[in-house]
Length: 301
Image 1 (cartoon, helix red, strand yellow):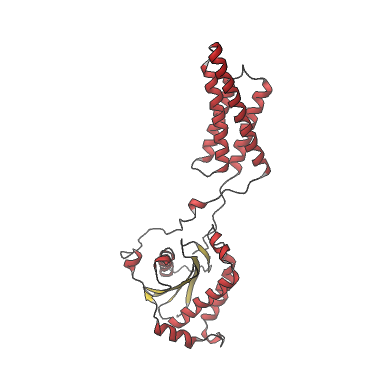
Image 2 (tube, helix red, strand yellow):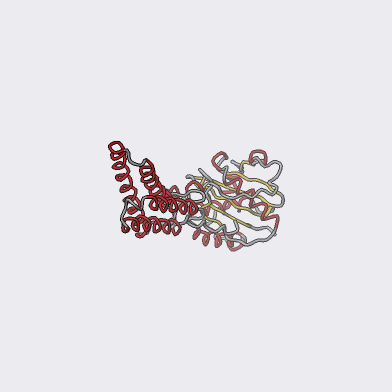
């Protein structure tokens, strides 16, 4: 059957998917062709603004303009003129609905997933050409395609001439920009208290250095003060930034804070020890609670 099977909107500069139709087609051939559409989405910046790729029983057509690309997958027999009219309609609606700044500032995949409603309605109309409005000037599009045919992309240009195999194609561009969940008041308080503890440790450490120079005191106390200060600062770093093994590192930093305070128990009052250990525990809890934001669902794209 001749039909549009899938459509998506992507950002040209990095292939970030902005919106897509949420079809749940389990056909293996369609699923495989969608993978090729994803490859194309990441290479739009290097391709002409109107292209086509033939892949088995399907055609992948796409256009790009103003930093946004529009990709669609359709049956091999679906008319080219209807395919590019469909893409043109998506383009007009998208640039009318969203501002350039919104598009440029998007950091998460499918930030404009609500546009799917328009994609679905338009797809239904174009899958039933008899219901198309007479406003669509198909003759003009047919003339334009005849005068400037879509560039035919080869698999070699995409770097997949030997097929995609079992390679799973997922969007990688968002990882370096992944964000932690928004700051909370307890989290901010814990970070400030950790900085306070680090400062107190530094002050005591420098005083201990002066005492060492005058009275030949124990060097290990100085090391304990500075290690405790470093552990507090590192906890602040873990609270603010994403890193591998983040939770485990926070527990190790808290363990170091506890060991340093145990060693310094003779130089600090019970209340001072309680304050430093409690702040370390509180900050560890806030690091554990402030996790990376969940990735947007894949919507079977």
